[in-house]
Amino acid sequence: MCQCDIMAFVDIGPLRCSSKRKVGACSVDVCPVGQSRRPQRGRNVNRESSFSVSGWPCATRPHKELLRVQAGGGTGPNDPELEAQLSLGCIGGGNMAWAILSGLVSNKVIPAQSIFVCDRNEKKLQQYKDLGIQVVGSVRELSKCSAVLLAVKPYAAANALSELSPDCRALVISVCAGLRLETLQGMLSPQCPARLARVMPNTPCLVGQGASAYALGPSATAQDSEVVQLLFRAISVIVKVEESMLDAVTGLSGSGPAFVLMFIEALADGGVQNGLRRDTAQVLAAQLVYGTAKMVMDNPDTHVAELRNRVESPGGTTVAGTAALEKDAFRAAVQSAVRAATLRSKELA
Image (tube, rainbow, N blue to C red; front, side, top):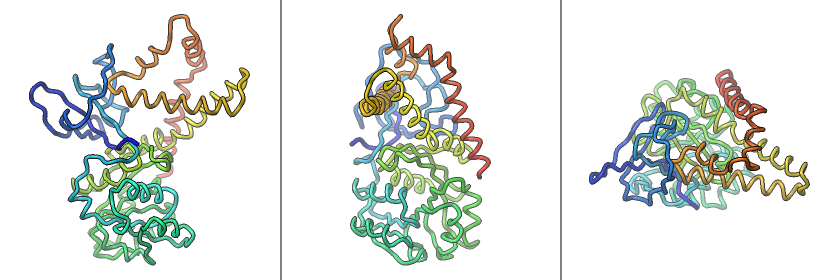
């Protein structure tokens, strides 16, 4: 299983250095080329094409800058000292909490004995006990952890945060949909010195292949940013954005799995209409989406349109199909779906 990290490799001749870059609203970690195998370059790269280094919806890619995006666990370039100091509390034991905590343990990011979870559902808690994760009886007991994950339904967040000790100095990381940092701050005790971060994960995190974005509160530190990345790269790609961009993240990667599932369903329906068995069509459709996504991730300095053009032989079957999609406004329909989901996210905030 591959690692999860977002890094850009910059080749500037004999000098190779480590730095951080900002592209649009997205943050990019830049590291020396020698730390990992460079992605293979495409032969016909459009250097001026629209391409984002991190986050994928924004700026033109700088010349000779290569992106490596890894997702789904493994041993990334973590800070051993940070890992050793980190203790994690979790309020809520639902599916997303389980995905994050089990990913951390299975990938040996944080030992199970340094993770504590609080939930009222005893049945849910048993799976955490089986993994060696510590179970506590109250939220207040989590106050001494260095980080606290808030993984409850939005309506339960205020009560949960009010139970933290007033002197809690943890980084509180919320995965509650729609709750803005300002709202979360108001749920804490006025004298509470806890810092805040807000993360928008998506359902593929449940299988260790998610796409997540996060924003930091005004009092959060650079080390807090490292903690968020450390926790979430066990199960997903993780990118930093301004909080104002999290609605767009919700519309794209948050709601996007449903759009992709609908596409897979439609592909399978097309196969069935043309004589394939339903089970055969669904396997082929799902695998083609999985494999095509990997082609995009493995060829980061090649524009998606160029990869598509490589499949479209002149006068062939594929170009006939893509022409039909264009005729039926496929591209516009997908963009409208992302826009509608983004607007709804803003309405719900």
